Length: 403
View 1: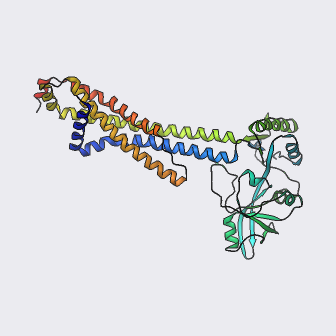
View 2 (view 1 turned 30 degrees about the horizontal axis):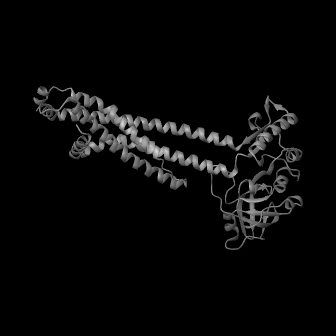
View 3 (view 1 turned 60 degrees about the horizontal axis):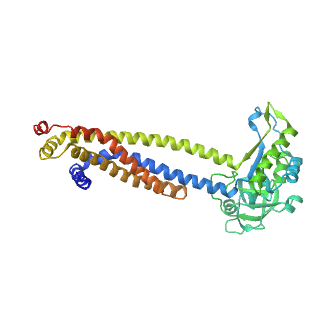
């Protein structure tokens, strides 16, 4: 039997049993659709994570207390100015550094008061996190040195406090003191990695938040960020910092008092989580495909029973067992390919919507489409062979007796 003739006869059968064929293909639709959707969304997610992490680079590290070694209420060991001086002096390739210390308080402008997060940061903070300045300027070392009361505001809080007024050089009250607004940032787009600030944050030089927390201008550091010029310098710095802090502060309950984090570690964690989620969804999709395949087998067995007399007539006029076998395999594979094709369109549509909502890059890989069609073909072959084999082994005389 020619394949083209087999396909033509298959479509005749599908047109004659439209509803049954549609219901038969549903399992394949959802299985293939799930495979395509999770593949596209997974690729988009990985691309977005890579781009987001790329903004900060693998040269970014931060040092913070190892909270796991402390019991509830126990005082943490924090970095001090001597530690920071050591980092600045003995870590080659150190380009940017900044601490972050935040707390909630009220900010007042004239008769308007807003509760916001105040972030105490250093000048390099805005370079580390690629914070765009829409108007004005960022902090300078001189601002920190002479304790100049200046602040930088995010756009949402600027709109709520100042309305249509230009916020630059306006005086706001923070910590019961007057601060001059010297900068307005660009609107923050949320990403996979950030420092926790939002579009209602107000930034001040870190000595002011330190004084608020500890009652002194002597700065303690909950977290200290450093960005280096090269990966080699980054790895060398991690080893040197670890050795320095361990020798100076010792261990607590046989563990180090500080953790040193690197951006790469978060990429690896994110990738592992995504792999687990993808595996779970792929298992569900595989179950759907198996169920769809069993549906194909069931319908093909029913079709063989319904067309027993037709099979007998074909054999009586010269059709061979291989022709009957080929015909029914073609029908099973065609049903699966049609279901797979619709599933591909369904999966692409779902992935496109998800990427649009999440603002991820939408990428359709030809490899995924080819894989989905291959799976559909294999499902058709696996679950179509038994019904086709049963049809091909019928005895013509027995088939002709069926009414």
